[in-house]
Length: 186
Ligand SMILES: [Zn+2]
Image (cartoon, rainbow, N blue to C red; front, side, top):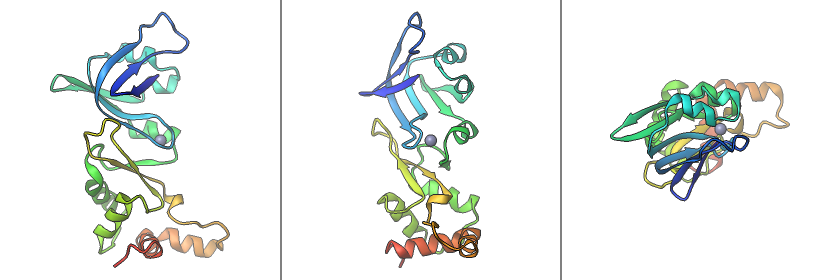
């Protein structure tokens, strides 16, 4: 298990008491608000991949992270496809690069043609935009990151199939109409 508490990161195994609890100063960490998994962390310490695996209680988590060292500290990052296997929300853009960058890569990936990027950025920033959630740095030093789930963008319950299809087929239109409906459109 990986746990972030009071500015520290802990690695432990609830079923293996012989495994020493590792405890390091945490410099930055992001936890998915939906699946509660640690998406990334940066800490003062060192754990090698072989020993990292020992602390993962679920087999599929043993290989779910990439890791490395930068400036004397270590980082771990959950692979996007590993997160996708366990969570219905996806990370948008690069971690810890802020909302502007997340929106920029979202627009590129989904080929969105909205004119007013700022409206979408503000709506996400103010946590008013359905389908998008902010993930803040647990330590409060780095910029927030963004996760996205297309099905949450608009409430399609009870909507006729044709209407639903028409909306989801055209993400640009959908985002425009959601921005209008929450009063964020100029
Ligand atoms: Zn998640």
